[in-house]
Amino acid sequence: MNPAFDSWAAFFAMGGYAFYVWLAVAATLLSLFGLWLHTVWQHKQLLADIQRRQAREQRIRQANQAQSEPVKNAARSQEKQP
Image (cartoon, rainbow, N blue to C red; front, side, top):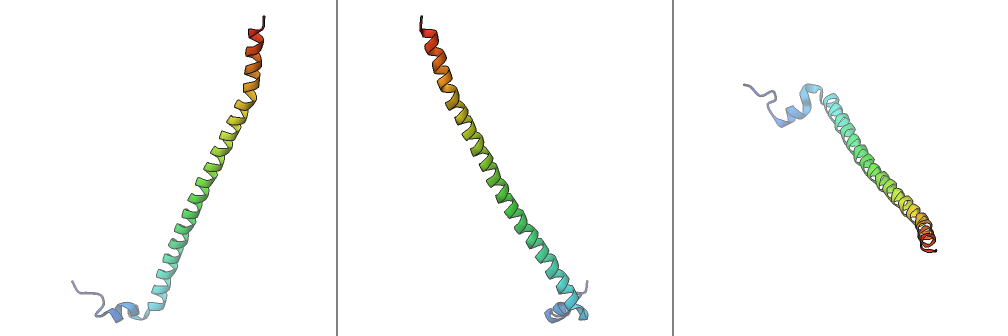
């Protein structure tokens, strides 16, 4: 098996097509890096949204409990009165 290039310089020159080859490589890597960054950003946004929703649901549950406590206490006091 013969190597395709005789030296590193020949490898980087790509037989005279280096500009096009390395431009394509750079565009591909840049696109992949951008996609990765966007995915990480979306992941963080999704986790923050989930935390906000859970906190809101917890506040709603606490508010409902606080509203139902006086009603329960009033019902108990009426049951105790003869």
